[in-house]
Length: 138
Image 1 (tube, rainbow, N blue to C red):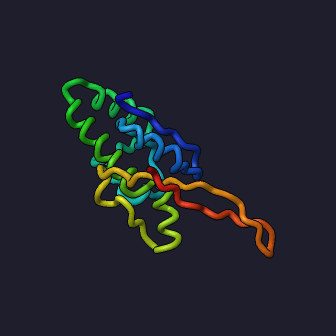
Image 2: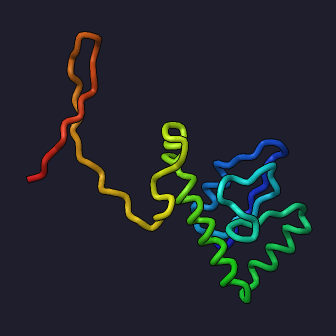
Image 3: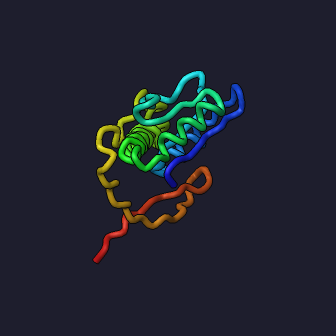
């Protein structure tokens, strides 16, 4: 997909749909909002249109093969913003620490491998409690 167009209802800005679109790596064109999410800058990593005429004009421009380099650069920068600042754990980190701290400046780093655990329930004085037991590979 070269480009994704987002059209949101008035006064109902769905950042979830916007973030999913940016995460695909395609160029994202969105209608204007009261405020774009953090780190998104029109003309740098996202395209904002104000009317159907401006949308047609921008689509024609960015889908022209002579503008592929600009479209791909902007799409990559949009992907980097969403992967570095707008993943689910970033929202959790903001609630706990006041700011996103994971992979903000290192979006290309691989995530650490998952820790293998075996879960079992242990009966306690107040019902059941989930206990994680590390699994050691031999």
